[in-house]
Image 1 (tube, helix red, strand yellow):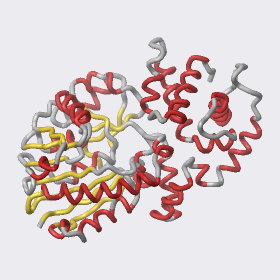
Image 2: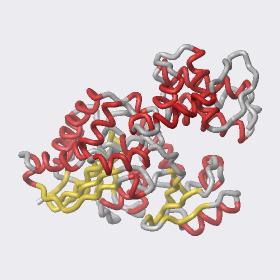
Image 3: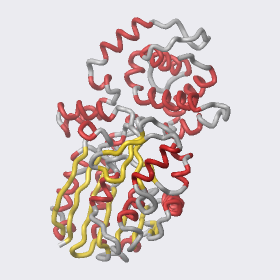
Image 4: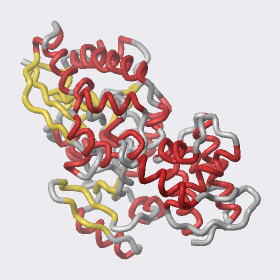
Length: 403
């Protein structure tokens, strides 16, 4: 591979934004890819993948390069040089690149690879927490799986097309896909591609959604004609899946505290030809109280640490803090207590997170069931999805029924 200055500068500037200024990696990549409209697919791929790669392995590379946050510009170049050396990329004769101790870099890599927190490039506190909650053996396997690059998975919008038809349409547009066992509506891309430019996407034939995430809507056991509430709908990936499973019949109330996210959901719903969704901003307790005892199904896709999805959000390893995790556990219990009241007798509640930690998952459900609000509910089943077992994101879902 031959390095190009303009592409490399885009990478360096983006790393500065992520590490020093707290910009989210996906936003930094988005900004970088707008720098030069002349860049082809290969150039754009280099920029995006290099940024994500160095963000993912930041701790390991920083230890090898002997640099610390906040990074001066020469420090960022040293991180980049480590990335190049470990990938066997020939370094050009540029002013920014100092004499490179290739042998020392490789030797240091071999040493540090024996220590999990460096090998998997994670903060000490996350490593300790993973061992505490999952045990040494499972955590070692799980964090290795969570550091692998996430595949692109599509969810067929069965309101508009069959999975087989979608596969043929994508093939006609030069995109090969495969079915995934145990996931009725999923297609896995054989090679990464920009699916958002396809005719199939604009026709509302699919959404990009990880295979694990696709399990949540199915866990609700919805039927056409029901009244279903998605309490933390966000931009609506699971809401749209619920609509598909309900065959566009009945009513889905999509709720969120952020109106901006619900606006995105409305745009996606139009493209998906979904018309049984009502969006409600949770701007007061009245919104919830009006719906007490009204829903056949309630989904609480709770805010969480996001540790199950760090494959696709590698910068969250560096942004997540112990205080946030403790605070979010309080929020999880609060939403369980409040939003569960919307389930009618005989109705079902699903609590879900994209975390692999029992303290955010099983323990929250147990605490809820032991509380005054939870005494009206019975535990039915739960499903723990670990990345090293499934090959997809880490997830948790529990189904409860109201007596």
